[in-house]
Image 1 (cartoon, helix red, strand yellow):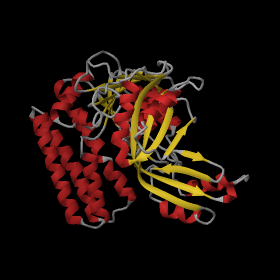
Image 2: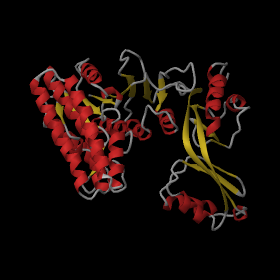
Image 3: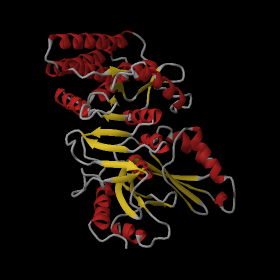
Image 4: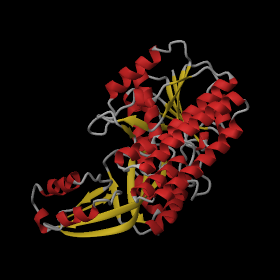
Length: 443
């Protein structure tokens, strides 16, 4: 059985939805099709939520009606029969009346989660109507009936597997199932979500639950590139990645893949194929446990980084200091990206500065603290054998003209991370691309 996930741009217009319908019928495999919201919808729902939080109800209503007009234009182009248009108009009427209801009462985080779920609920239902119109037999299985996170906001794997199995058994004669990405319920049964980009996560969680033959992530780009094609000329898709390489690249800035989605597939050794809906014949990228060894694979960059330097004489020949530092970040639920240490100082980075002022207040009680904002982590990913010579010279020789704030290497054999100012990001990516991919690699 296959899992096929289509992102927002893949279902972003009537034309794209029609192409997706062709793709899911290319072969006779049984499959579960996971859809994101129509491109741009989630951002617009977030804007509606922001207006409601600020009690700008007229502004929220205006935004809702504008979004409704966009969906009315979409269905006018998508369907060719009166029966389908009637069903779609009834769906839009129901969903947008529900959105308007949020303007008439108190708006809290619970309502916001329900609001944000509407994009995927709309796209899957509209796609189901189109499949019915052209004679593709499908079954819509609501993600809210089987996708759940626990009290720690982690996927409840047993619940997902057992309830998804019930859905599939109830429709044994069906070959193609449609469901929503991103949306789920929490441990209290409330509507929740897997955070932005979570449709990828939904796909691999489903893949793990059914032990899929393959999880396919369909986007508007032909695989994971070896550098950022928006900045660097001459990039190309990487044909094969290991799970660890893919996870590093996704976490450190490669937007094609959600960072959390790799581990469910990795645990069950399920290949992930990154495919392009615009060029379905392209090879794309295959993520699995089988990849080339001893190589530099790709480069990614993550913006919006804050560097924190914590310096104290109490560190010298002392134990417990690092524990105290980490406990501060744990209390404020702020993950650390990079870390380096010396005898009297610790430098680390975070990408979430929501609780930064609280963190600094605590750290300053026992250390001198300095911060640098507007930093970028540039991540060089590959299979770096510890006994292999030449990688450091190749990487840092390429960056000889770029000021480096921090270096992290050794946590894994797959990642060398370098911190630079955001203003030096473009130069760093281009210099590394030239040094690692257009010159002779390490012998």
